[in-house]
Image (cartoon, rainbow, N blue to C red):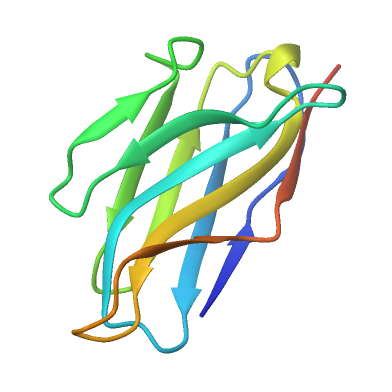
Length: 120
């Protein structure tokens, strides 16, 4: 199983970016999918999570600015980031709880990370 994240880059304050993360490989089922981020010198923190049914949870710091969504047919999770601030600068990682067979438990998988830099 692999998670491939894309969409990071350099953006000015107030700008927008959309990150994508596609899961591939021997996938039977995917439960929650989410995004985390880690800024230099800080711990990795939750950004947003979406369940298979579409329920969402956001960090207080991104509420009203970021929108997480998923396409279950494509095993892909997205986060639309708007009104970006310099403090949103971080490496963004996707995560998914994946089961590889009907008898296997869900386990978490991580993507490789994509850099988001918000700067003028």
